[in-house]
Image (cartoon, rainbow, N blue to C red):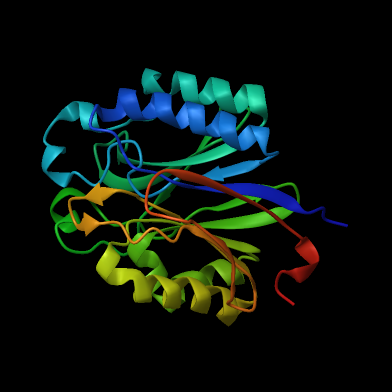
Length: 246
């Protein structure tokens, strides 16, 4: 029998200091999640840089597979036993630019998931992925999505076909998109009888003030827990597997 899964969604207000400064803050927040017993921590879209697309002409804003800057993140995941999903601009070995989620495991290995449904100015900087990753953790299957992916029912449908129990969305929903956020996360959960999780960028962003509302939705589409405001906050929930996909 699959045991309950404790996981954290981090609503995160990105710092201006680039990848190095944000990595240090990610380590601190993973330590916070560890104090609450989390096995999985989800950060927002582009959490290591913020949604500052105008800065992507700087090569230092991009991660690569062999990037030494991920050392501290690998170490905290090794020490805590947590898998952490972080957001960053990523260059593949052949130079293909991706809007990525990187799932860093306690073993030090990294699974990559690329945004499928780019929109707006993202299309000038990134190449769309063909599919998103589904992580296997403690008997659970966790599908990764990045922001606008969640607006497309077929994206969650493909995750459900791969047996996903959780649809984990790393995003930036601005304040004017609060109603869309509610509908997307609730509908994706209810349509496929799986949990949905949102880690939203917080604070003031280039797209306007954040909507906040990071949290967890049950397989019935109702909110289980949600952020109190729009700043940085670690939200943790323990989800029983028996309720998923019933």
